[in-house]
Amino acid sequence: ALENLDGPNKLKSIYVKSIQAGVRSLCYIHVSVFRIYSLFFLTHWIATFFFGSPLRARDIKR
Image (cartoon, rainbow, N blue to C red):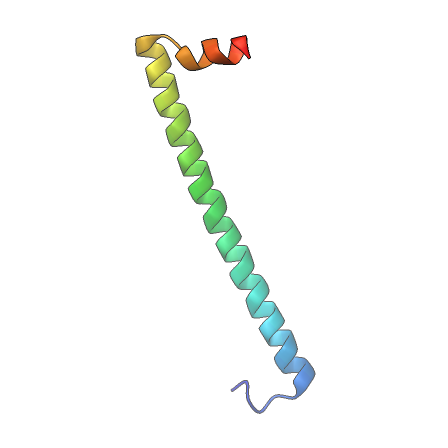
């Protein structure tokens, strides 16, 4: 269906599709980063709760 369109419309549809794909991948990256960050935060909190906080002590020293 795209082949019989004229140049500007074809270019515009490609542009729109690439923008949609970029936004989708950006959302996916954002979600996965948020998951990794929350997982790290949770494990860090559990480790702090049970074993004290070597990470925090190191941060204070720095």
